[in-house]
Length: 305
Image (cartoon, rainbow, N blue to C red; front, side, top):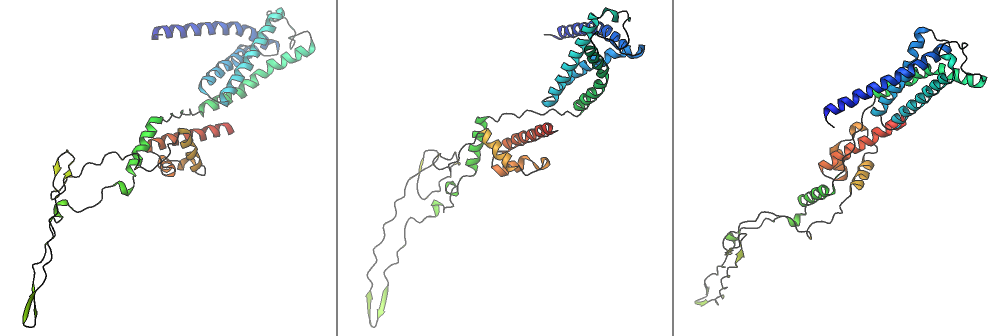
């Protein structure tokens, strides 16, 4: 519906409510005169009853939980009371001309006592319930709904953290450059030893054949000799077999662990960083868990209030 249609609907509703209040105002004014109210009090009496109904209706739109239930009960009680008094006004024609005896709303005494008690107690109840509703509305703080933690994002973040905290066996070891490895062992030449007057040559040591260069496959797919330095490849994703097994926790499990870790902490000390360190999760999950825990505690305080 566009803006013009909404404005027309609100104006129509205000008109209908205003006319209904005018009809009810006539009946409640006569009832107030019958129970002893003066002219000014009888004129204001309908605002006490029907006005609190409007206030309770606004409170039901703002409050939540037990406070909203209380506002609905006040709205229902005053609506029923206004209906009863309007009904009595229609049954007793003498009320219209103010010819009824003072304090007499019914011929049967028990019914008359009950109606007089109802009519006279509504202003007192309006003071009490109206003040309570206004206090609840002014002190109401809407509780944000916790955002659901997406499973896909959780798995991706835990996978990233697992790669970042992989074991030392997966990291590149510090090895000497291939270019510095010797490819041939030097063998000393045969030397002569002076044994008295004769010089006997020592038995020559057989030379060790030169090592054959081993081809090494470079990252670009080229074969390089062992004497050259092979470029180190960029560390990629760790294979699943090399990663340490870690079960993936569901959002409910994360919330349960965070609730257990922060059970003894005050609300001011429940932080995302503390939750992240306590249950080893990602910063995004820690912030969402913090909001959920604070929302639960706020709801618990409201219930106990």
